[in-house]
Picture 1 (cartoon, rainbow, N blue to C red):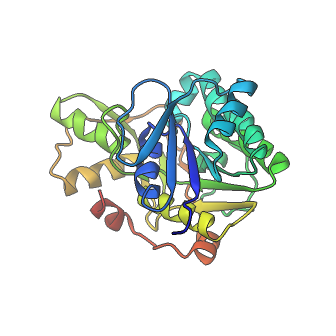
Picture 2: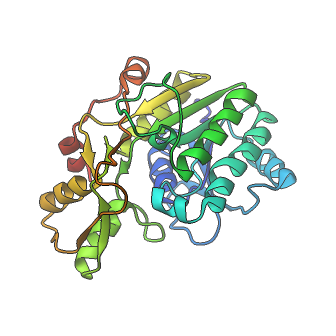
Picture 3: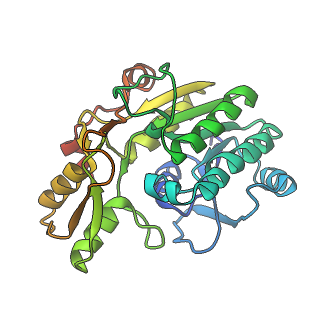
Length: 290
């Protein structure tokens, strides 16, 4: 029997980490780190870890798990949360990533960093991998800091810039879709924007792209992941609500900023398709997977 590769997921108790752990555990030996609460999955190992910027603790974690692949999925990708607390965003998305990447070099592990479409300014849309990154948000700036470090220091990395990921999260860390559903049930306002244009994709495609990069040992590449359909956050909420018979009276459309301030963060993922050959999904097809 072939020896299974070992995958370590930092932030493995969150929405993204939990979905990756469930999918990747079918093919790999998966260990997840968590801070406090965690909804444990079958056949996945868990380690409590709170030392993102503790050099010795990061090294100890790597030596204890000896992973072949490290996936950094720490922190929230919520743009508004990062704007409210840019210091935490910097700590989670930049500082932690740099320390863990450095520690991963000691065990010669592939380092997979999950970035985002907010790395771009949002003034053009349809961004390709080689386009200039000029982030206009605190989240994007934090992601850019980590990307720059990884590209300059890592000998074996994959950076995945993804559009918003659609899926269901664990009880401890509900996803955007989960919170949309819950807000309708308890009749609580759910804030959405008409001025953020993106091309969301089901989170299962992230697992497929990462799995492909492991199996074919892709190195030192930036991969864009997105869907075929560009929508505003408000339109996305309306379409998901309609498909699932969810009331929309609770949706509160944000009106801050200039009336003409439309930000298009959509990603061009044609290069990733030629490398990874993952399925091309419309928004409808992504919603059917929820």
